[in-house]
Image (cartoon, rainbow, N blue to C red):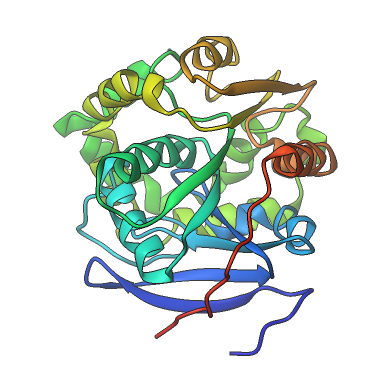
Length: 297
């Protein structure tokens, strides 16, 4: 499939016995982009073109999220990290950076630990984590515990397929300034919410939420990787106060706050998010990188 410097191209690769979709744009050292629990490549629509002039950017639809139509699979943090470890091995990357948002940020940290511990022939040279799910944020814990019960699971499976009327409200809650929410944003996230089996996918992640975060609490101090934490000061999904604790636990982390932004600063304040990201990446030690061809099936 021909590559374009201005438009991402779609590819497929077999991971964990399933076809996984990803978008690719640009050339240079590889960067892996991971969206949130209901996110996918769509959420990086303002980020990918900005990075593509200097990097080879890959945004994945993890199984059970984004536009993936996988049903009946484990979509927990730990399992998604395992699938991504398989992905990077198949891609043949010697080293790469990871940008993760929310749930995807937690997966990025879990992936980094898996690569550290396993005999995987690659390394993560940097982590850029946008409001990542972490063990020190108390936001939404009661809701997660409720939805993890049998009754809560029944409720989610019943309500999610008919949730269209509240999608705009849900997206607005992710922004610090609701006036910035566009019809494109609402329709993009609506497409991910209404995929077949999405409620069950979410439930598998929520039911392993506590053990996955307990694992991260133990291993985060061992992630001796340059990391940039980016948080919107008006985030209502992952507590901005947890940013300071996470920064203290991550050995090489720096923290940048985007004033007035909510949970999705890469959408709400894309110019500032992209500037912070590029400045951080450009400060990293430079190494010659051999970029393999893009495999697809």
